[in-house]
Length: 179
Image (tube, rainbow, N blue to C red; front, side, top):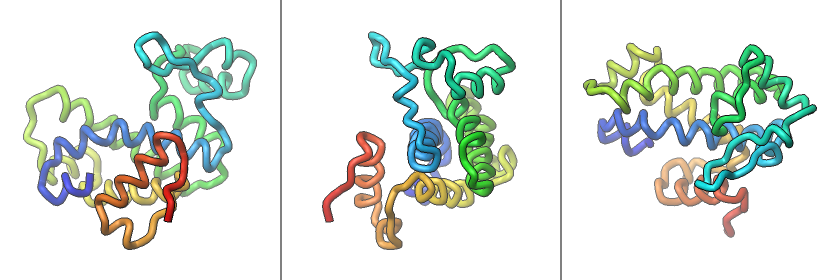
């Protein structure tokens, strides 16, 4: 995503926010709140993960989601919108809670506009719609990556390929890369 910013490809940057915020939310739930969202999910025949009401029923997770959705929680696809309320409830880190809400609000404010409408997506447009510049959004993402438990160094941030390998390894199985 940083490369997209550097190249001025802001629409592609915005489209990349949705999967990234979902993955980061899931990692944060696991690393900061000791909640593995997979314990409450099933995978349908199309390979799409959804909440499983049998696994959710009677849990505090289910109650939290019902409260968030005014009693109308449906076991839909698992995404940022469903995980952020869990982070807000189970994390003691107020800065993390603020930042995860900011990234969700940013993503919701501009993603559909950039993905489904013909708009000129400029740095100014992003700032106008979200209150954040693309660089500020990326700094927010970097903060959340660290909070998600991804071990990164200054050199990693400067190495696109190495950073990409680390993030992919964490998202795909939470394993650690050698060396």
